[in-house]
Image (cartoon, rainbow, N blue to C red; front, side, top):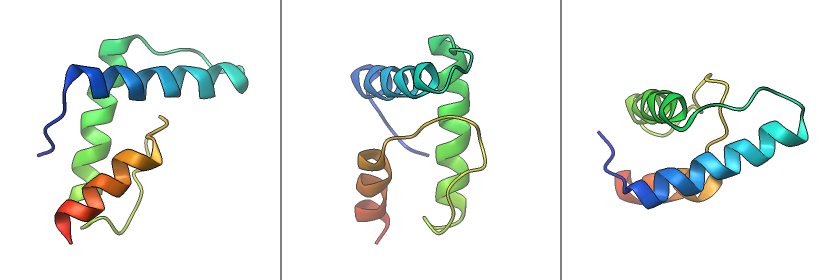
Length: 72
């Protein structure tokens, strides 16, 4: 389980929205992003940080790097 603040979620969601806008993909509602974000982070943790999740959302590198620091 990864603990995060609403501020972190908002930053990640905004980055995802920018990436989606640049590639003309449908934007996600914040709560939809939250659900996918949590699933993706759980999957990432389940592999020990070895594999990026196969979920169609953008997760900023700084989030993954902070997780890697904590699990190593």
